[in-house]
Image 1 (cartoon, rainbow, N blue to C red):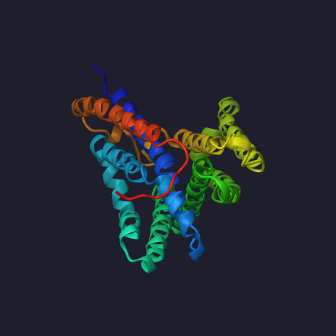
Image 2: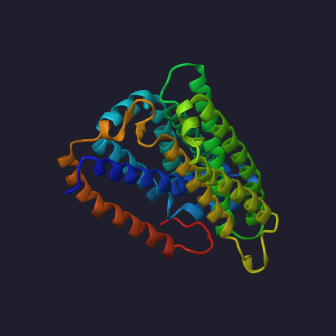
Image 3: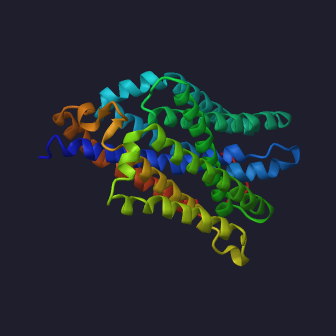
Length: 334
């Protein structure tokens, strides 16, 4: 039987996996929503963009529910602290998600002259959701400290997350679309990638300055010689992606999948850096995973359920992406 040391480690790993997969999967469909062009002549392209995420977008949010559920049942003390401090931005995020869900269905059912209004609602809901998520991430990284600096960092984080989601959303469109929309997506990916890179640099500079413990962990010799590979690889991925995008689209649509793969790598590296900065704290500077964890007996029962549920979610997610592989076709509602 696993002891009280390893059970919280396993559950923080499961929660981290859920957050990472959510950021990638729901990140690109939020990014597509942010990038929707609002011109009256862009209706056909908006339809194609929404068709590219249509089979996936609702299921992608499963990972957010899983992450919150794991925190609630495995780390209830941390859940109470986090929700207490993030109650308002969580409510704003839920409003954004509701706007997206309603707009996605109503754009097909409303009168033709109201369709653009629902597309604008979908775009506004996407922006509201990403800004709220980024703001929450910023407050979390700051350990929910009061003061103007915490909220300014939250705003910076909100803009950074919005840029990151736009980046992965644009890369998704490069992979899933063709012709003029794909060319437009290439331009979006280049511009959002540069904004995202500046956001990563800004957060990477500010975070160690406001968190001395993070600075000490990253620049502790000789560990620094290994952990600095994370930002080095991240920089290389940004650079190579920008270089490749300058040569897309290619004949026979070669390498159209590479930008999305590189952005996923960037997300993985940034998430790894965040985890390295704060592990084993589940609430930075306040509570570690062992202090926040439920009783070992409870965790064992929960783990049995998780070992069934998580593989099932992974399998049906992989199956759905396999079924709907290839380029996005015309939008159809059934």
